[in-house]
Length: 89
Image 1 (cartoon, one colour):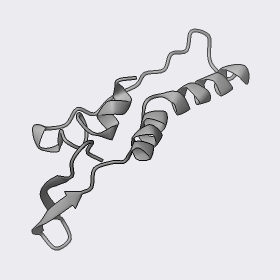
Image 2 (image 1 turned 180 degrees about the horizontal axis):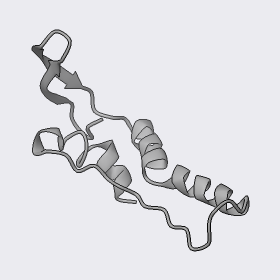
Image 3 (image 1 turned 30 degrees about the vertical axis):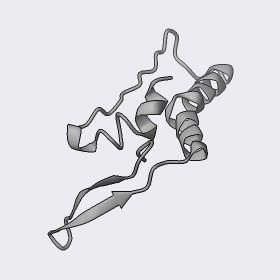
């Protein structure tokens, strides 16, 4: 979700092949916090610790995080939205 102000843009429906207006309300503090918790890596770290504690990793195992940047048109939702806030962590 965007932070600070709603997002207004266009959406394309593949089934009907139509373009329509789309709006997403700005995230509230709880939604921002929840997204940061999940997308910011806390859940990932919990999984890594659980797997390591269970001894299921190969020696010298590594994990890799990929992040979606996306085009400028979706930046208010991704880079400058709740997901972008999460990736700051």
